Image (cartoon, rainbow over all chains, first blue to last red; front, side, top):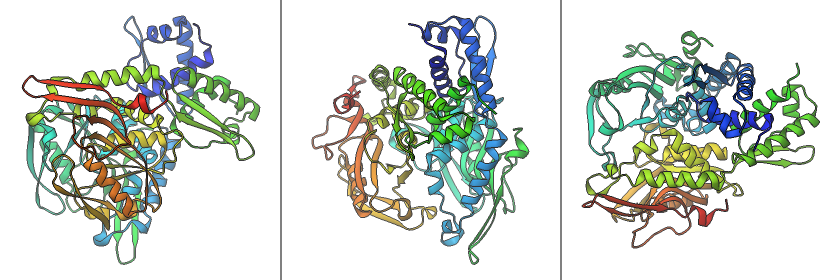
Length: 275
Length: 275
């Protein structure tokens, strides 16, 4: 059965979006639609142009017999800028102020559409980075970690603060929380991470960076390498930041509980990432 | 600037997949591409046919001035059946046996592609159900809950077992775990759920159903209604199941620690859902 070009374009778009960073051979599409490879090549050229033009992402063509095409998410500045502005606006809403100057964030982190857009944006920054796995810490970082990982087409490992029987044997470390200076524990299931993995650390919020630092220590136990650190929100006013090289979408500069004012600005995304 | 049909089809496919269950007006697309509404209508007819033919989902057309089109995920049996078979095969792998007969599941729950396919399948079952929010309990249910919620285009609320300062004020209940008969606590941030919401409960695993029952009690405190219960795996051998009406993809019949044998079969999905 043969497919018209229009149907092929629709199905290929869906397939590629669903399989980011995966090498899909021309033969696969050619068999799927009973079409000549030359037609598939033309289709892919049309999709590549449309993806780049609409800021959806890009296609990389791998030539040769074992070749094919790979889709990468790539958010354009045209989309990234208003999204980060929207995030800033949402986070500055004084309604999210909690006693003690904490911020309620679950309305944002509970919105799959926001989380996915943030995930796409962060994933865009690691197109050229070798990443085998995304790591986060339970609980609030989990949705963002999956959103990033699904765009990078890699698994997620979740660090916990308490041991659960369903984790099997675990490796645990003690670390000092950067802001409260208290000693805390975090642990990771032994079988969840392979030795030598390249790990992207993702979290919702980074203050002094104690938690992220803890995750880095944990990675050392697995002989794994830090491929990057990406957070939704970084808090600016921290005397001693434990982490230097990270990516953030939003910067929280000040929380004034008395005046009910939350001051936020763009994170370092556009300084770090070419869009 | 005018767009060729091929580029429109690609961008509309991406847009619709990205905005499930959202009414998109013809005018929106018409303005987006500078094309006549009649052309957009033709495009949508092509996309609808391709989506249904390829088992991606379906488009519902809402007629009239305030009308437009809505995309719904709808996994075909052709895709659902082999996926559930694959899940069964993966879960039956004796390597996941832990001391005490527990199963290590984070390899599956940590794989965004598996989680998303499971989420699409579960979401397909609720096309005609009014759902305002997806609820799950930390930690392991979270990825699946987001996968379902993103297809239903609704927020996620996360029930916790311990209170966190960033949750604000919470409502807590005590409940009796179905299998261990121990009294446990769960709590939900007050501001995370509106009164009268229709809630789909999603979890990774259901044994006797004590946890799900706890979530139902919690919903009563919020005057919210249970719109459905969907789990990845149900355990079959439970003397008294506390929950009757639920959806499962996989049924765990037996775990034989001595013989290292895990017996699984298809859940009740195909009995409950017309595919």
